[in-house]
Image (cartoon, rainbow, N blue to C red; front, side, top):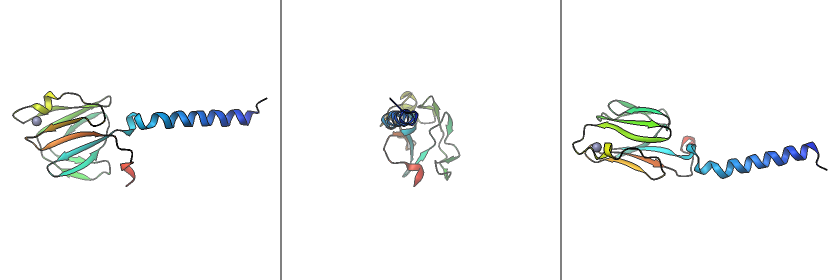
Length: 125
Ligand SMILES: [Zn+2]
């Protein structure tokens, strides 16, 4: 016969193992890397619009001056280039990306957005 504490411990480890199984593939594991000219940094992966025409804050809260006529949109874990002033519009036509390793590249503006799913926790550096 099980004691109450045994049941609690079993349930606890069951929940823990479920969390550990799903976490690496979950939404929180994806990171958004912004590459502009020769610098790159991670930006918060949360729903909203990212206008590159001014200052952008990275995940550490540091400001980056970009001044590109581009805007990205994040919705439901997906990201796309909303508009861009580049001639070929390849970045805008790339449309939504959402998988690890996917990227939106704007060669004329020298801007790229990459979904990075590396294991390391970049917020703790
Ligand atoms: Zn473009």
